[in-house]
Length: 472
Ligand code: ADP
Image (cartoon, rainbow, N blue to C red):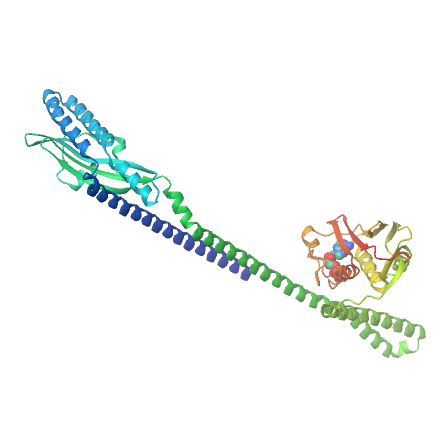
């Protein structure tokens, strides 16, 4: 149990390590693809910018710059009129917002980029974003600061004072691709800004590109998981079988020892002088030896036969029999033998159905079920045998009022050497072979056997045999 638990823990830990490594690798691939995507578009946009200045002799902001220059002249005059500090701040904000609007409205770069990307056959659905880093008015060589972004200010100590705060849409983007940075300066203003592009489809594109590695790594994790489960189950099954074998050897020793010791004692008894003169006693002891030898022989034959089945196919010696007659005979001889302590009722009607059966094996099958019904009982056994014949098959069920079988044990009772784990192993003697034998015989006839049971209430074993007799 300890070993199994440590195997389970080691397996789960290894799978977790594998999953983390795979996640790490996939994140690495994702970042790499993201970088490559950005790099590709950065290069394309730089090409586009230089192609624009080569072919059109502009960087796309000439009109905007002219308008801003004219607007700056106006703004310098307006600002000079205002004396109140808070009114000055308000005016500066208005100036900054107007400059942003002019820049966005009058630029020609985004349209050129879009065209350029389309011609290059790459994605042209991007968002174009302009970020102003600094704007200052210049009045006769004196700078009037209007706006400086935090980042720009931190790059240039000392901090510029008297500027307006950034509006929300002027934040530097994290994921976008920088196309161009620019500084323009005239006699009336100084402006620093950056242009970025961002692709809404970017995540999807990268997802598509990483899907094969993602799929493969998920598949490999699933496969490793399945293989682990199979190995673990095999290990558990092997452990179970080895336990069963150990139990079997213990039980077999126990079973074989009982008749053997009886025979030994009987042998010794026969040697006693006072017994040798008593003919009746001699006969009785001889009978006992005979009975125990027979039992011993049966046990050994059963074990031999089962080990033979493992190696060769079942050899059936089938005869056509009237199933009802045969069952009557088997039940009758059981009643007069081991079953005399039980109340057995028969409620079957097979309508004269004839089947091709191996009579010896069939007898053993029914005997095993009946003797289990008597053996696994803690009160006076009451057994009901029911049966009927349909078009396709014949079914026989044997119900008892015995100790019953738990759900878990029901799954295994037909396994070789299996004995239910109710702590009754020595109270009820057995080798765990009876039901295995029953199942094998039923299957060899093309039929099957099943169980339904409730612990403390009793069990019902149902045998079904196919209708294999050719009616003449
Ligand atoms: P054995 O009787 O030699 O142990 P079997 O293969 O005949 O082996 O039965 C397997 C197990 O199934 C038994 O150990 C017993 O626990 C359970 N079993 C079989 N028949 C019955 C029954 N009629 N009622 C309760 N338990 C049963």
